Image 1 (cartoon, rainbow, N blue to C red):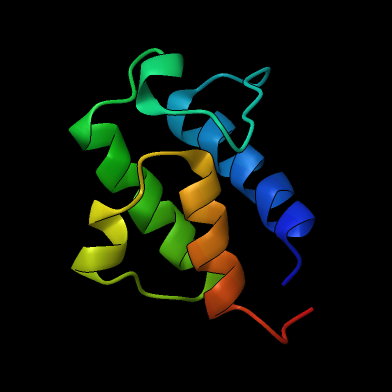
Image 2 (image 1 turned 60 degrees about the vertical axis):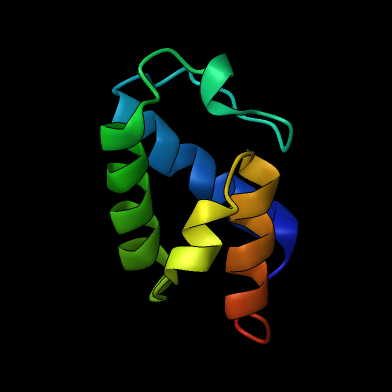
Length: 83
C-alpha cells in the first residue's frame, strides 16, 4: 500500500481514537504534538491500526514508533502489494 494511502487511513484512525474530527497528522507528528497521546492511547492506536490494515505489529515495531512516519513505514511494508 502506498504511503499516502496509509497516511490518509491513519488520519481517520487518529481522529476516531482521539475524538477530534479536525485532527491533522503529518509524518513528523509525535505524541508531544497531540493532546492526550499517552501510553493508553498508543495501545488504542495500535489495536485500531491492526484491525484497519489486517496486520499485526511486533513488540520491536511498536517500540520504534515515535513518529507518525514510523507507523506509516511499518504499515506500508506490511501491506506492500495490496491495493
